[in-house]
Image (cartoon, rainbow, N blue to C red; front, side, top):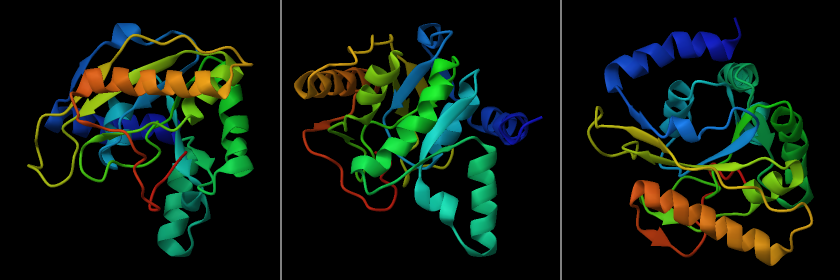
Length: 215
């Protein structure tokens, strides 16, 4: 049993029992490779998405997790590695291409990769402009994008508030040679689909946070 499977059977079972997250739209989840694109409200989003999706998900995670030091850092490195997370360099540019290289074989083999299009957690619960990494990855590999709406995980409210995960209809990938303008337009469409699932107020600007930017 992998660490991912063990976590899903133990912590996942506890989360599903206590929070009873409502899940809808699983019929939109392709049987083959796909990129899951959720909004990002809190660090709990990965947990709730992971325990409610009936397939293994490889999450993009900031590379600092894989370089953490000290006893706590060693535990963090072991967890993110054991869960099959994909390191993403926050510097962006060519450094982020290593995440593409790691994600592509997973997707081509029929697996799921989760990418938060906003690139970081929302600082105020609103939905921010999407970064183009998820769409560029879809174009490179030729797999669909699945918009996902997460509600109820924002910090600051009741601990046991209702949580819901909604999967929207898949979006076909753009052509591999798509122009930057087409990639941008599809990214905006993806964010619009997510907003339709969450009802969040949209902010036409990037969310800025150096803490956990992943794309």
